[in-house]
Length: 459
Image (spheres, rainbow, N blue to C red):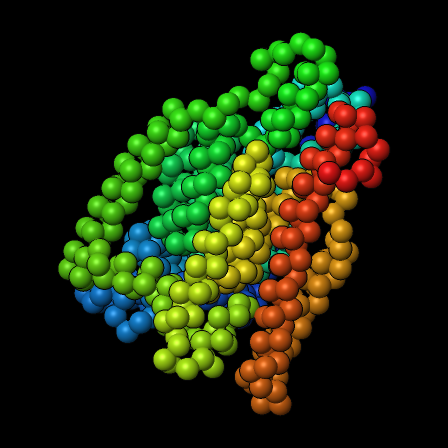
């Protein structure tokens, strides 16, 4: 019976994957891709297709791609994706080849999410077996968490509009997912490559090195080690084979070696690409420097553009430090509290960066919502789920309306659009807080099952 259910679940999964691909292709064939590439929720100064095309045109004209402060992305993207901005197929939509690359990136990301979710589920079941709690914990048998996470990522409207809107977010998301997949599967060179590329494309991905280190050193997510010790103390027999492995520095050193090699390789390629246009310093100043100084104050779904448009110039540097250090302040406490769940820690880090980064887009939200699908079993009791769902839907509908009232109709002002950005940020805060709380409550329930305490007992 279980094999039949697995076959049905797999059949249903591939049906949804096919439907999501067809839906993307239909939207691509709409006139001008529904103009999604011009939406501030989809395209940012770092992910805009138009800026990528401008940078490629400048480079082809023997000028620096960073001249004029239009392009602020990687020079490698110019070499790989730049030709697709001008190559067209007669009788087909403009930029069809570029759109197909985005579709492929989304599908590859979904498959990597699925494979990682399967690894996490197997590790979760092994932990329950070691704790003798398999019969007491209900685990989904129809669609595994990997399938659910992959479908959430593929069918998420945020993912779809980022793909159809010709954003570079699908490429950045694929690099992050590749890093986590490599670390979870113990493919260290692949994990290092994904982390280097993700950091190269987006500075904020650098903090993912902490969950990657935990993944390589301790293995995938599992309940706290003290729960295993409590269980084996009750049996008065300590079986080392059933305990989670202790932290190992060997894979971490191996990862550092490969990360160094990939970093040197990427920098050499960038240096060759920009040899005539200022070299690596020009790249760092126009990419990472652009992110840290928040030079472009065009509207987006974040909160920094409005704040720095209003702040006095005298206090600008101070608040730049405050906003960027705010992310760093959260790294250590979360790492200490969630060190036994590195993949969930990665989800939390991605969500926090999406909320506080200089130029956020819906592609960032698509990534962390997909990663959240890995933990549908553990977060079954998370509060405010319906409220969050309705909030995301409401913001998605109101944001274009408020932008239209402000920019095109002139019947509103910047506060209209900024209000939706504030609500969006608050929803992400609630998601992170309630998600972490639900995960800690899940660990507490496991401890109560081991010690025999009532399910509603507090720590």
